[in-house]
Image (cartoon, rainbow, N blue to C red; front, side, top):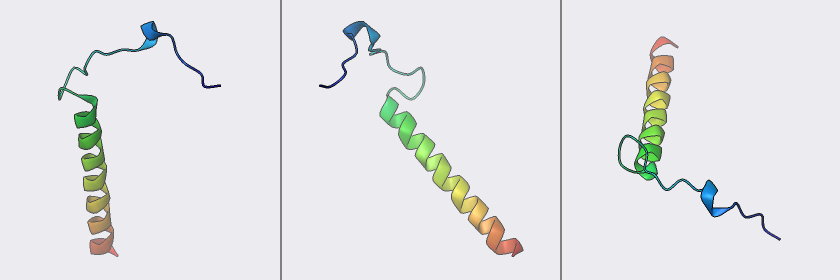
Length: 47
């Protein structure tokens, strides 16, 4: 048996910035990829 939340617990309101949760996830993943690349370049430069 699957657990189901009551309908009143769902929040259909969009996030305050970027218009949708998908856009926020894309920005967060892009930011993480950018940080990984910067730290990798920093490590290679000072190694």
